[in-house]
Image (tube, rainbow, N blue to C red; front, side, top):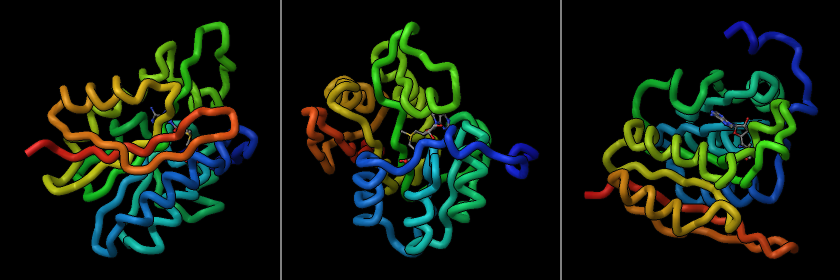
Length: 192
Ligand SMILES: C[S@@+](CC[C@H](N)C(=O)[O-])C[C@H]1O[C@@H](n2cnc3c(N)ncnc32)[C@H](O)[C@@H]1O
């Protein structure tokens, strides 16, 4: 895509933080060399670049053009610009997403690309729900999804939504932050 070769602003890119490292470590604990891996919303590309050291067939997508450029040029990630799966075809053994998971009111919106990194809509679940509607269609039968959300997102609501959309969902990893917020990695598979 043309945007991927244009100059980018690193200040518009979500740089690695605690949530990034929690999901990266979860991915590295399950990824296998022959896996086809997709990171949705790759941001800086930290997670996809780490997975690619294990699985040669690792790809990423990202809605933010600055982040897509950063991931490609700084971390060498094979990335396309895409709103979730709109530019993605094929199915994967592992799909991971550190989603925009913070409840955000219209007044709190920042109206820049960093907003897309954090803004989960009023419930925190707007993008998470869109992702869960589309992701199973890109998952191999024995594949798994690792989805990072937070206690602020509503973990039980997300698990219920996944189950209503033909999946099983369980808590795979958690980490509690200093302010009491709990980061949660859900493991989601197609129900048999
Ligand atoms: C919380 S950040 C995580 C970034 C990176 N994966 C990490 O863990 O550091 C969420 C990322 O998802 C991207 N994103 C948000 N909505 C998206 C969408 N609809 N399609 C693709 N990417 C999206 C954001 O631009 C942002 O880079």
